[in-house]
Amino acid sequence: MVDTKQEIERKYEATAEEAGPSGRPDLPGLPELTGAGPVATVVSRGVVTLEATYYDTPGRRLLADGITLRHRTGGADEGWHLKLPVGQDTREELRAPLGTAVPAGMAALLRSRVRHDPLRPLAHLHTERDRKDLVDADGTVLAEVAVDRVTARRLAPEESEPVRWTEVEVELAEGRGHDQRLLDAVEGRLRDGGLHRAGTPSKLAKALAETEKVAVAVQTGGAGLGRSAKPGKPAKSARQVEQAASAVRRPLGADDVVLDYVRRQIDAMVRLDPAVRRDLPDAVHRMRVATRRLRSAFRSYREVLDRTVTDPIGDELKWLAGELGLERDREVLTEHLEGRLAELPDDLRLGPVPARLHHWSQGRRDGARAAVLGALDSERYLTLLDTLDALAADPPLRPAAAKPAAPVVLKAVLRDYERLATRMTTALETPPGPDRDVAVHQARKAAKRVRYAAETARPALGKPAKKFARRMQAVQDVLGDHQDSVVVRQALQALATQAHGAGESDFTFGLLYGREEARAAARERELPGLWADVSRKKHRAALEA
Image (cartoon, rainbow, N blue to C red):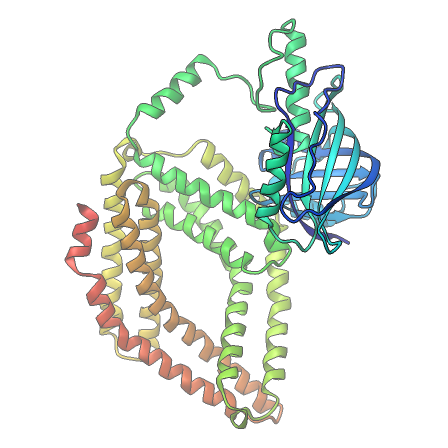
């Protein structure tokens, strides 16, 4: 069983504090916090001893993504803790009971990062925590301030000498939301008392940085003790420094623009994986969008990235989007049908319509959810992630990649736009009926591709690309509403057939079907005017300027 809470906290350390292989640098006395914002009194809760072992892969994949996994004893919340970054000062903390092995639920949430690598003990931290509650005038606990005296040892790749430091954590009480004013008020007092924000995001990062600093000092006879470096990051060679400087001097290239977009979509896929597994709102949709954007970028920017490499990856992304789509389509359909049903007056809802709809949705949900989790747990998915990592690290660049970005990305956007224009002509000229439905759907996919291409091009083309993408979004929305109506009508037909077969009235489903037909027809009538507006030459000219 995994429990979840949102952790909103800030960490502080003493100015000019230096941890060494021996000795324990102390903070100046904790300043008076009574009167900081709504704080009326400070209540001491005593000292507790915490023992924590942190786990990661040999390559420290979790640390690289700001994730921590630990096994901790002592305190009221002892057990396994998994912390996932959410935003500034905020992390999602998942807890599971004590045990010798990483809980299966937590291991699953880490699969997109860990892949096939083992999770091994990385560091051990012994903490003496002096806890104080900040309480308002009504006796409500607002936050906890903890003065932590830490002794840490790195366990891998080899055990280190212990390092020691003292830090302060300020964590908002549960239910306080993100009380920025309280945090700022307390921070003001701490700064006046000689503290500043910690230079590392977590105790683990601090432990690794300090133990490696000590190791360097030992190897160099103390010369490296004052230098700080990111854990696990070797010093750059002269050639790497020169390459970095050259990259700064070089004008924005097509590869810079396209690869930045591609890497952001890869990162989004990996980052959203745990949210999809936890069935968090909108997670499936956002991950599916990332796969589609990535596949679209491969197709739009084939002059930058070699299609012989990206096409097979695109096929795998299409497979993943399809698996995610089963759940997403069910969500959209159910929401749409429930909304349309709620619009009807009671006297037009004949028979057990809500119960029929609920039963239909839940039946589809079970299968869709199983398909999503099956895909994320498959070797095929892990292989796809490894392949994407390899592509990002060593991209298959074509000659156009080295050219200035603007003309290359402009050409790609306009090529996709011409493709959309052809499909729009077909959709507008096809008589109403199933063939038009297909043509409109094809135009919708083309509009989405142009929009994604324009979003990719924005760093090179600026605001005109942003405005162009918005116009394509407007076209996509109308075409999408039409396609949604097609899918909804198919679902209503199936529901009416089920109701009729069970001896129930199918009147309401038929009524909703007719209303969906009317909505689709209305969207079709909007298309000519909308397309005439967004396809004006001046919009294209602005993009080319």
